Image 1: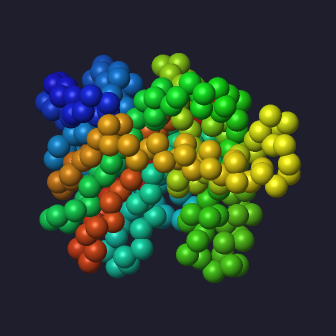
Image 2: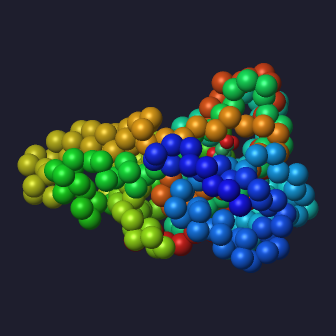
Length: 281
Ligand code: SIN
């Protein structure tokens, strides 16, 4: 197995590995898991693997999750289809970590390219540990103990009818997470708000932050938007140009990603096995 680091901040390309083998071989899988903790997102070119091998590999990390809006492959529960062939609308072209709207957002994911446009359709990943570490000391002090709400309603729900949106919100009520979480395996601190799902701070209002009721919302939303904007800094990112069969494996606890929607009307088909995560602290 060869590891080629792609940027100083994040991402490595792994060669000399067949992921079908890795789905069966515990020591090969352990080497991949170690590389994932070190590099946060791993890329494997042109992997000729079956859907069963895809879900078996992801299943080595943990239980797989379904998605309430994007459907799964009927024969492979947990293998979510992200197919853009008949609809220009995209949910993935904003910075997000998958399932931030869940009480336990995904631990990670294994994404395989089934079909990609000749030009365009790249995906960007961001190192959110670096995004936290490079905040100024005064901002880091200001966000200690802060919590933020995340919801699926205002993202996936935005293009639904009011009735469908209300049903989605009822079935998946919004949740609250720490603004800075700790990685359960590496101990790293992570900036844990994102454009995709974070809506507002839930405990911003203190005598120090709010002197008059009216300054509560603007002060909080300026700070939240500032934190959200940190994911867009190129020095924290890696960008992958897909070829058919490529696989990306990412640690969703400490990264965000953004899939560019610049290829319509060319089709783009991806299949993602998302791995159930734990409750952030
Ligand atoms: C996702 O947002 O999980 C999918 C990323 C992609 O389609 O490249």
